[in-house]
Image 1 (cartoon, rainbow, N blue to C red):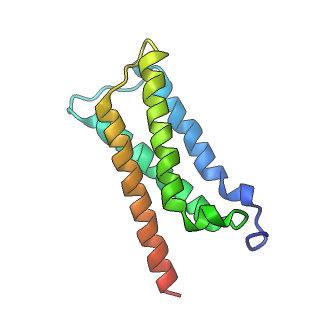
Image 2: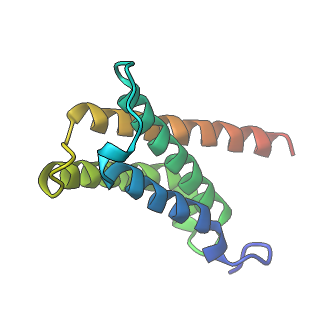
Length: 132
């Protein structure tokens, strides 16, 4: 089953590109990023990165038609994948990268960003659906 002439793979390009960007930001050497004198800036960045990811992947699950379970249970799958991604990036930072360190606060910011990004997408999807 196709979704209005567009391939299902097409809908997953934006979140895949964003995931690659995320990995570069989260797992790259921290020395190349400009520092900030404001406390908590790192948490805001983590929140935003994962919020955008949740929005994009939620939108992809919503628009694709090949796997109905992803469309109708997208919130569950976005949260499961996002929590695993957040835990994985923090584990890699803590155990495999010497220039980075794992931080439970970053993980909490990641999960809160996931939930916020998903909530924003769901609100927009409901308002667009109700407006038709």
